[in-house]
Length: 355
Image 1 (cartoon, helix red, strand yellow):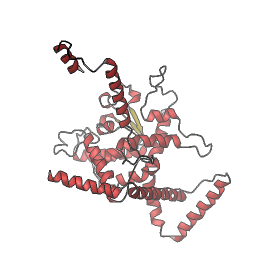
Image 2 (cartoon, helix red, strand yellow):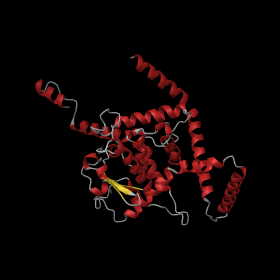
Image 3 (cartoon, one colour):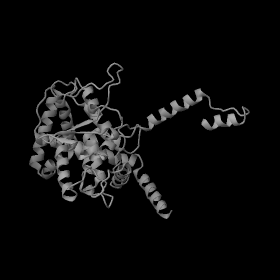
Image 4 (cartoon, one colour):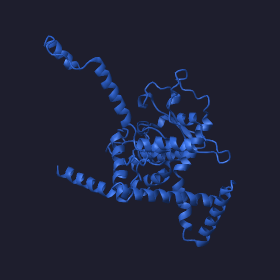
């Protein structure tokens, strides 16, 4: 637009700029709309997330910093930049290993956000993981300041830098766009109309929000968590023009710790269920008892009654749901051309090597 205006002046009006103010406004609005659409990243069905997390937490990715960052994005429902640049001085642990960390203004999406919109709470599982991680780091580099330093640099211990965004994106593509495809799994968006492979941002935040809003109290059938609580966990400010300043009047720290602890339990549920069920799968008596209990509970549920399931049955049901998620990912691999996609990736890889 500046060039056209300059050229119009230089030609003394013989050439008229084709860009009017209304055209510029429409162009700007169209660009904003396009940017908004591109941010609708693909997210899996949240019910499959415990299985997906189990794959991220496997021995294949042990000591992989990118894998750790991706895991912590999921466990905290936090944006990638805040996790990548997290510093130990901003992490605060309680005696029960729950805690919170504060995102510095410069690392937050909204630079002028108040402290309450930059405080991320977490449960005891994340606290335990952070404690173990810090112990390992101190043994290697006592003065390290980043929780997830860029260990791809040779001087990472002496000159610590945060992990870059490209490292996370590359890891996500390698894992879910290559390794998982090679295993025959196609992890796609929960919307069956969309066949795109999943993205880190949506896999953590969109899944958390959907999970939280769908949880019901088993006794009352009412929502287990309020909308305000969910928004607080995602660090979203209220859009109301009279209450635009963040209002936590209906959200207590106790509630924040509770929902984050429940979320962590859910994320680790498949791994824990496998550890309990796999040893008894070949035991016909134990498996028979579990199936009998399940049949009895299902019958009572049909009659409108509720009964507390045993820990063994709970683990068995979680394990079965995991198998259903794995089967669907295998079916989607065939349905959405996973083999063809792998072939294209190999061709692209060979082409890049030749170039």
